[in-house]
Image (tube, rainbow, N blue to C red; front, side, top):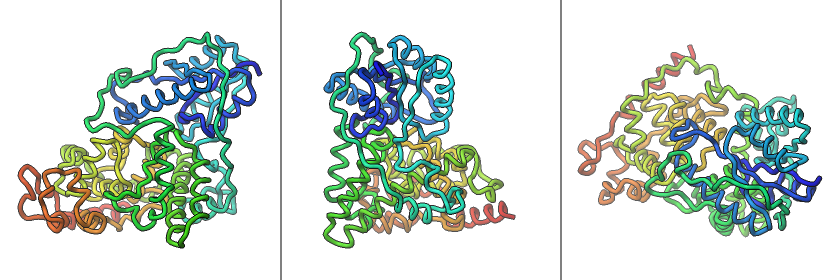
Length: 464
């Protein structure tokens, strides 16, 4: 082929990019394009943190493409007509892209396929976001797993596709004009006060190297410590495709094979399990797309939930009077990130202590997190609420006081994000106080034991 259009979607890298590698191999000229969304100010599934990271990633991508002889073309508008118009203007024979695992992306792909056929343009879609397609990891009877453990065993046993390497040169026509790279002002947004993690493929690869050089070996033992150093901090890099899942998996296997002890191998295996969870939730969303609107487990469709109201606002602001909850919510607001253990704590607090439907928390997370992944976010919220696939049983309700005592023993995490409490002894942070812990810091907004009993009652009612 003479010229093809390559559509960047959630794969902002030139290393081991499945569709980009194919386009560079099969065409003489490649026109790389990114399409900007037209929404303004408010969006149900994203916000300033993620858009800020997106902008940084696009700047990095543009520089990387220039280094290999190409140029990122930016357009805005509805994806299908914009792509068709650009392809025709460039004289492109085909459009290459990697598939999106989310329902909206799949709908756009179906529309693009129809329009390409009408316009006489070939559409080439590739699997790239996951190691295995949702229809690849199935039970012996060919159905989707509803429980993670047997899914993960099957997932671990399957052969994995190897990385393809880096695109070294990309010939592109010099005559195609481009809109400017976006900034937060493009969507009418303002940056968060704390700033987000460094964006771009180079920064992501540095994070991957740092994690694999040491922290991964302690992952099994220390991954639940919010103030610890074993978090991979790669979730946003996988979400935006700054690193490929194939390369990450391959490097993890290399690290496991080079491990000196059984405990180090356990650390690597535990992290690989997290990658399997990610694809388990991709598969759940693919086979059961209704989970975005309804409970995966219909037994709990009738649970009585309270309206969000002022309690929900206090939860978002980190003013609940539960130090571990408030630390996590403030970390999220300032950085667009929250440790995985903290996500479970605050999600269970919202659904089991405040009795607010998981949907409200899921939406707030997607608007605030840099790494917001629709499938994993939905799966995590329904897991905590007790209504999802392979979820925590509804009667397993985390106690915020014992959670902080177990996973933030010295109060380092709490004191990092709740400065009012920096002078408090750790023992005072892990039990309900009778008087305020510090001036301006609220007393606990509820009694956990009482709300736990209320949750048990509501779930039992729903089952009946």
